[in-house]
Image 1 (cartoon, one colour):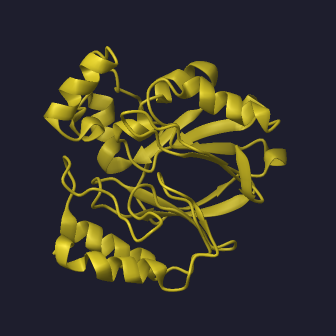
Image 2 (tube, helix red, strand yellow; image 1 turned 90 degrees about the vertical axis):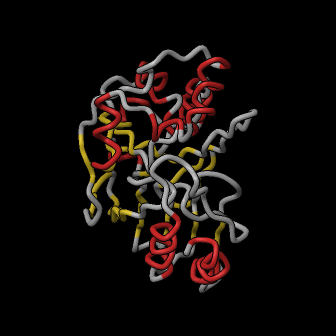
Length: 241
């Protein structure tokens, strides 16, 4: 785990045959009110927890897990991590919170063929990704957490309940899988995904002033070029219409 900015830490995903999302810890350690963003893939819980401890962060300071969305590569090791920090609340956008609580795993897996493969490869049982959600985010909230303020942005398209977290003071954006480095974007062919909605979400993000881009995969970007997200939206516009 590396420190990206004051109160922002990066844990690089460890991809296998299935990608493992990056995880982020946000909040000033002295606040003892830290948030873990997107735990990652199954089997990666110990790695993510060890990475946090290696930075000298007390696990008891982590009070919540926030999901940018509930795809398997982001939520897969959530249960593993909660075994070690059982007090941590789970915050998810309202649109994806309901299915998680009801055991509807179509958004988690994205497609039936992928679900069948993962259940066999990882010996997963139906209902493995059923969670109680402590807080249902809507988009538009200002979260005063960990001595920092993060704006919640509802940015659907890659998944119906995708959110971004934006720190306006430091110009840091955590967009989940909506936009990556190298003018790449998230898939829009999975359950609940929608190309035109993803296009609109990119346009929404393009209005923000972003210096540091912390996506779910690929490399993180400091000193993001001005207009980068707008250019990404322009390059993908015809595919998302």
